[in-house]
Image (tube, rainbow, N blue to C red; front, top):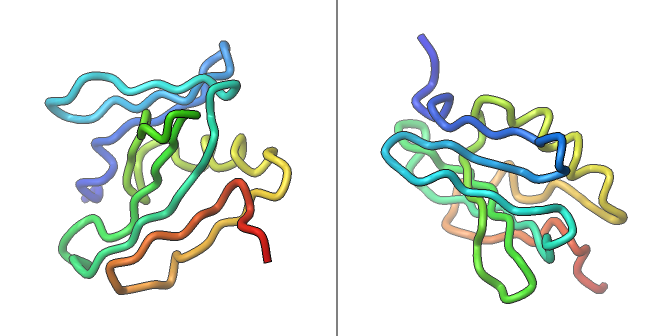
Length: 108
């Protein structure tokens, strides 16, 4: 049995965009050239709910793409995000309601 999160389908397109198709929602999309920040948000709804989410924001701070961990295609999207200078996966072990900046890397 697949996780419910697998109903979210994310991909990197040939136009270097990240898209997300989710059940009963409009398709979300962001061009890599418009990407300004990447966050991981965790919550305390696990293991029954989607407790880890990716948020991709543009230069205005608006979330353009949001998808849960275990979304179909997540590995390919993360492979593309790892090409960003300084990108770092953060917060994946948190069981609390928290937000972690993955890119750009926060200043020390």
